[in-house]
Each structure stands twice: as structure tokens, then as C-alpha cells.
Length: 174
Image (cartoon, rainbow, N blue to C red; front, side, top):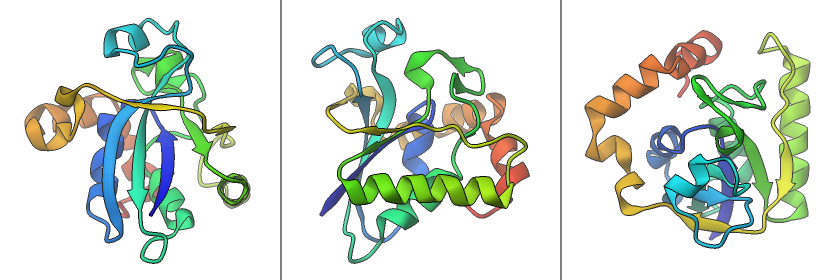
């Protein structure tokens, strides 16, 4: 098994897209990249801990590749906005790819170059690629939120502008 740690705004919105793919063992919502050990949601929301809301994906690279994980990831958020996502603003909502080894770093940088060359977005992809150094699972009520609260999840996805952005750029590809 391998790990991918990705941030793209609200972590609720990054779980569902990965949950349906063969080879994905788990998708855990949590906090990554900050300086406080075992932060709470309330602490992270202050934008003072350095953490971002992220997901950690455990996957079988013999079934689904890291490159395929990145393909899915880039279809879930706005990679041209480095200051948050949709109406979620601030450091804790910024997108980041946390690489676990040099091959993940190179794959992420190559994917960003390819997306920029394809001119899919009106602006360049600015999602940073940073070394992984920590991940703390979020509170239980955040896990699998789309299953626990499907109506609220759908309203959030639509009301935030995320769904419209995804449909504009990717249609029904995810």
C-alpha cells in the first residue's frame, strides 16, 4: 500500500471522489503541514497552526497509480487559487500536494506542467508541491461526511461554487 496526502479546500469534498475507485483502501479527512501536534478543527480554523484541511489516501499502486490519483484530485477543486477554495478562504483551505517521495514530487510537478500546457483553466495552476511531514486525522464527525449528511454535503458542494467550477472545466468526468 502507498499513501497520497492532498489538500484542496474543505476536506469533505475530497473524500467522495476517491471513495469509488478500485484500489483505494481508505480516504481519511485530517490536517497536514502544520506545527501543532494533534490539532483540533477549531484550532486549524484560526489559520494559526499552519495546517491545511487534507485527505490521506491509502491505495494499492498495483491497482491505481499515483498519477491516476492526481488526475482525480485535479478534478475536485480550483488549482489556480492558492488562497483557499471557493467561499472557504485562508491558509487552512489552501490546496497543497504533500509528496511522500521523490517520484510523487516529480509526478505532481509533471501533472501541473501538463495542465498548464493544456490551458484547461483561465489562469495557471499554482497548487504548491511540498514535502510531507505530518497528518492528523480529523474528528470522527468529519469522516465520511458525504455519507453521514448527504443533503448538507450536496448543498455545500453546490452553494460554495465548487460543483459549478468542476462542471465547467471537467463536465461529468468525475
